[in-house]
Length: 195
Image (cartoon, rainbow, N blue to C red; front, side):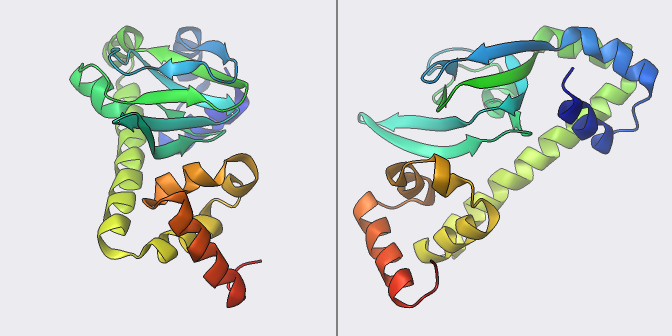
């Protein structure tokens, strides 16, 4: 099991070496080439994962137009959690934007670990709470903040995005067209708000 994953899991629950030895065999490493899917629309989400390397785009199609919902970065958990929990077919895609390595755990193994290791349930809840908070913050931002403010927050919180992700995807992520993002960037450059 990846050291960063062990560190992340240990932050969320008080796991002993014995606990980790029970959990470890259930985690598998999977490699995705750029363009391959962790999840496709119309499929059931059977895995939760931890991104070791690479970057994924989480999006849906709106009349053939790609709408970015988010990104999964190294050292973050990855899944379509609503589909995973509710056992529904996905309405979204999760696609590798570059070659990626993910440590995955199958849904059936999670059920087994719930029964075998009570701490695993606590751990799972911590992961879901963190993901819920991320989604809630983004939703709240769309209700309250301007596109300019969402863009500035993105620069502050995720500067890596701007080196690895095309501008049209960033525009989609903050809920504007590429042209609108271009205007926002020009105004911010003119006011020396960004460099």
